[in-house]
Length: 409
Image 1 (cartoon, rainbow, N blue to C red):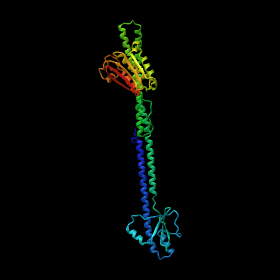
Image 2 (image 1 turned 60 degrees about the horizontal axis):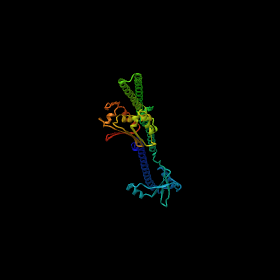
Image 3 (image 1 turned 30 degrees about the vertical axis):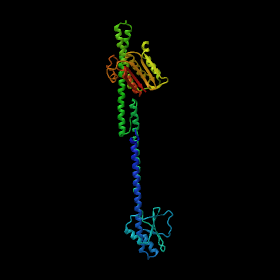
Image 4 (image 1 turned 135 degrees about the vertical axis):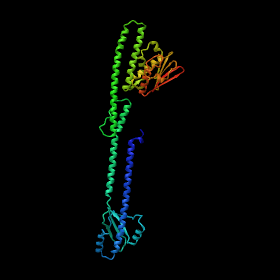
């Protein structure tokens, strides 16, 4: 899955954008509040200038009293705090205020530790006044910002924790897609993701029960079929051979192949592959051995194998697939030899014969009756299923009177 398509990526991106938006709003609020505070102190400086203009003929005691009444403190020392910084009036002060300020004694505004000071620049009347009026309290808005930040982080953590089970559910579904039904997606949570996981787990439980019922049914059926089949073969073995017994032997052999084919199909659908490193030559040798070929038919095989070639395969199933291809090639070959070539790219089995009368897809369907020479219609279907389960590819080609089946690794 691409990172930008992940729901976690989108959640993280949303959180970062929300955090940046909140930070920008706070910065804008801080700048605006500072501007308003400076503006207020400039107006206080004008108020102080007017008051001092009216008190210019009074003594220090009367001036101190009048200043205190206006919430100004006339300091006895003219020294500013060490960390004081001078503030400049806002540029958008109107012309009336600027003109009025120029008509008053010039004052300089300073700020230190949240307090504001006005210092006279007139040499003959130097003084330092502290503004005693309480500063504007913006603590409430700062508290709102902190609460919003905490709420945003809490919401992000809760959402991420709620979505984390999706990763585990995705892993379990991938295992299910590979044929593993022994998984558990049940959840004790009470959100929508837990509801989906529990519904999926209930569906899995029903599939497990259906699989167990099917396996039990097929095993019982095959057991019941095998018993009379074995007894029939034993009875025929004790009878004198004639045309009728030969026909019954062929009939019993076909029924036996049918039961074995059904067993292989059931194994493919219900049991996962047990893949281990296998020597390709050993697999092919075992497949030939399981055909129980006569000396004449064995001589019809021409096998060429590249040495020391290994593949990861479920040995019994892969040998069964090879046996089916070899058996078909020998059975329907119009003339020897049947050639087998194996290397690191794959295995190819070729035999001469007339072209197929029907499409290959029709012949490969289970229990197909399209083959005019008879047959169960299971061999190629089992082979194709085994090859696909291994992640390989079964390729067919007919050219110049030669059928060619290849398993590409």
